[in-house]
Amino acid sequence: MLIASALWGMLRPDDRIPAYRMGIGARLPGLGPLAALWRPALQAALPDGGLVVDLRSGGYAAAWTPRGAAVVGVRAFTERSGRRTAVSHMVKATRGDVARLLLEASPPPRRPERVAELVAASGREVEFTGATVDVIERG
Image (cartoon, rainbow, N blue to C red; front, side):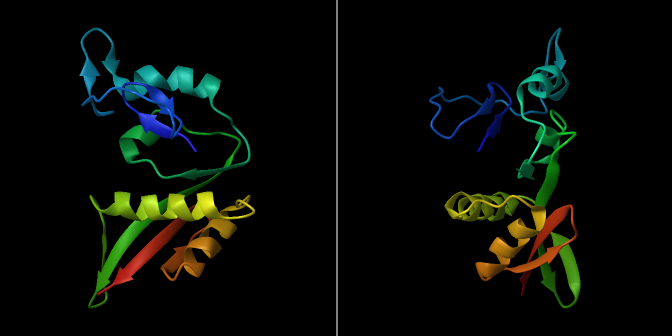
């Protein structure tokens, strides 16, 4: 598991860092946008095979795109009276729940469809498109 940081790049859950406030959308004087600044280093350092379950927001996803890996994203939607809307801020909670499920899975998933199966087995409503696992909350 890697955690994207605008300031530090990619971190592991047990990495210790000081508190900071900087989003990936920041532009540094003389350096430009952070996503573009990180892109070459991340492309060179990160694995490009296997399964990547991408739980990042759009800004962080722009900093690195795996080319040879099977990639599956996770989105969250609320559906009420037949109308579906994307969950914006609270999608972090859904993605955190999915991360926990995947970290606890034994064996860990190796295929995108297995990610969808694990999330569905947790009692959530899931639609799998091949590239995304959509978690649906009906209200």
